[in-house]
Image 1: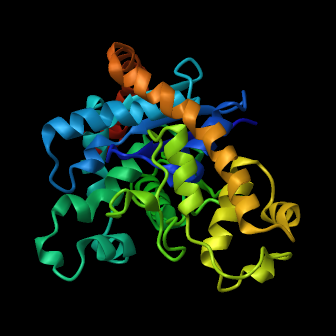
Image 2: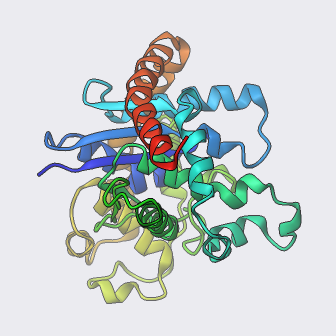
Image 3: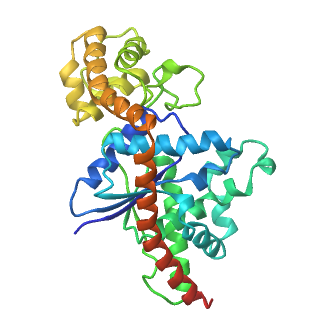
Length: 333
């Protein structure tokens, strides 16, 4: 039986190889299973938990949508929309805020990390963000949500909220309790300059990441300059202990080649690093530069993006507004 999938990506701009391997590549694979129904959202309401420049945010929404389309998410197979266009998300979020408990939110480690030492200065939005995420998922009766390790705790919260709503209002199974879909393959992509840090758009060095808008020459140059170490290529995965940069590059190769890390290690065992980097640079360029070209083409003339987002938000509104209407009836509004 097919799965109902919901996932979202923040329009923070400058999406990179880590976002592609960790999320978007997986979205395409889930969509291409004909039994699944997929809803993919540009979560712009989440983006404003920290102050945004309105013009940059507008462009980032379009860029994130362009990345979806260029990577192979098909609006004829999946619903693609931006969250702020569907008012049911904000409505459901308030209703679920009255079900969620402070103690649950206080346990969220991501808020502690993002708010830093002075949490009193963080926005309320950043604190209650996981409740909006629960609303996003529960409005579409999603059965499965693709999540990385850092979002697993938020999905647990969505499950708790769904169960409490169903219990408080004696409506068993009204809100579907979603399951996590955690990628089995290598999905946590690290910086090309430091294998202990996640690949990030906020890293001051552009050489630390492959941007999805990089051209072929930029991609090849960055892979060739990526940090390695002074030892030879490993012949077993336990040979990667304390070699984070090498593990990261082999993981990128394995993910883009759809093979296991073990098979990638076997393939390059005994080779020197320059041979491996040449092969890796070719592979990354082959997979990413067509996406980059398509993103740039879509962003030159954004009427197609606007049309897809409009049609997608109408489809999403149709599903989500019905669910909110039922929620209101159950509550007594």
